[in-house]
Image (cartoon, rainbow, N blue to C red):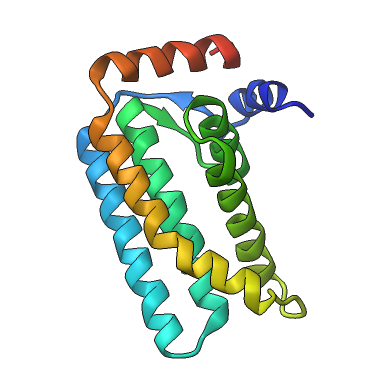
Length: 161
């Protein structure tokens, strides 16, 4: 299914894409959660707990992305839908691939006892998470009110909200 079609489907789901009031306070709160997830990731690395380090690395990214959505005024409680929205609005190239790979690793490690992640993929995920959060924090800080409005209009048009 094309990303645009998936966004339309997500907009019809109960916990899918919704436009809400933009919130700088929620943006800041989710950025704080992203940094807390990085701290949890590091604590799990130090403790040798690969599984939960992977989960925390994903949530660091997810919360950083969600911070920007709160700034724009977009609510979505379905992770795949959230990623589809940010792919369409502002997350491009390698950052999308990185987020999707981190989500896949998180699902494999959080929900399946018999699945593993290669050491190479694990290191790539863990090493790139802090920089990802920094990039999203910078993007959020640089996003103007006009850009917020433009992104809201773009989402309305593509999702038929």
